[in-house]
Image 1: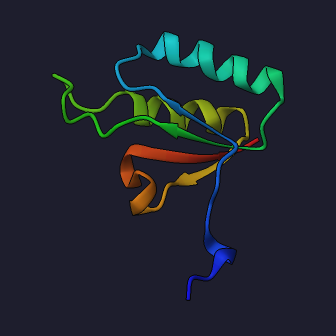
Image 2: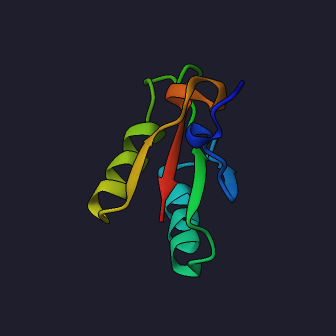
Length: 88
């Protein structure tokens, strides 16, 4: 039996793989400004294919923290280290 209490179901999922930090910020700004969603999953990747290591995970975390937006790492089956559950 699965306990549904702990299942996180976002209203919207955005995959930022391959985006620059500027592009990611524009998209996040728009999502926040629209105010349409309360829970989104932001896929940031793990930076495994980046020459200089991961950029987006730290950028997005810092962006959200600076705006006092609550988030946590997604569960392993939902992306683990490569995704964030964001609560607007």
